[in-house]
Length: 104
Image (cartoon, rainbow, N blue to C red; front, side, top):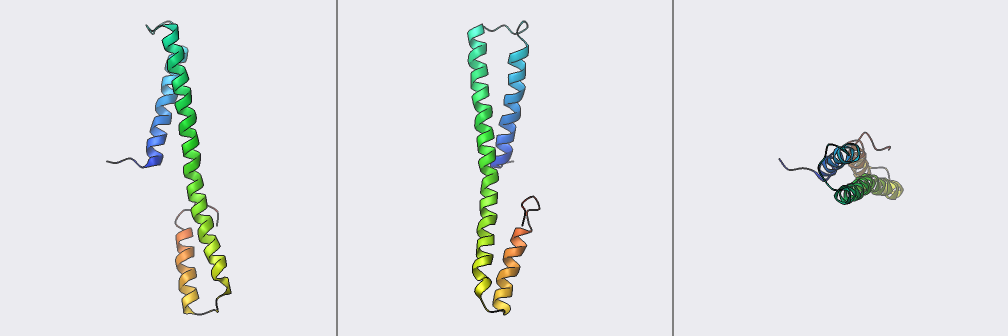
């Protein structure tokens, strides 16, 4: 099964969190050098920040998409009330209602 971008980023984020905990708090049981641990922690912190950035960007894509739809609804508001306008409005509003997490 293929991951969506969001699922992939969430998987990477969970992995980084688990590994950060593992390398931060198992100082006496892990048989790695201090420098290796520092390098590993630095990379994991970077990856955690990177995944957070892209998860936020993914949310913004959804918000921008909905904003464009709302802009189209406003753009068509000047049309005369008829079946054509109603068809436009119905399709645009129906698309907005597909994602209950985004405010209309």
